[in-house]
Image 1 (tube, rainbow, N blue to C red):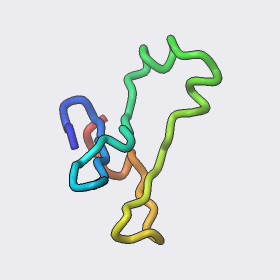
Image 2: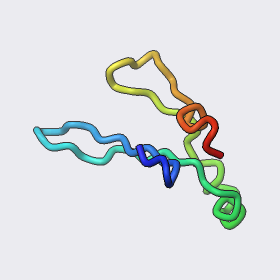
Image 3: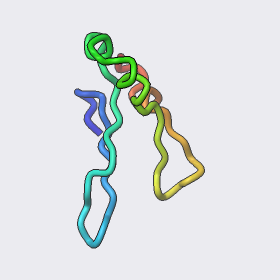
Amino acid sequence: MDVERLSIEVNLLKDGVYELDEVYAIYPDYVIEAMTEEQRANIPHEFKTSLFPDLTIAVRDVFKGRF
């Protein structure tokens, strides 16, 4: 988790090596405004963990109070 950039990097263990699986982020307004409609639609707003597959976490909840 990078609280300065408001992003979360999820790494998964594959064949004994951690590999980056996904990055979830809160983007500033100027970045979102520069995106296409398709890019905005593809921004993930929540994620799950491999340890608790029934738990869904909203990215904004992780950074509540930071923006």
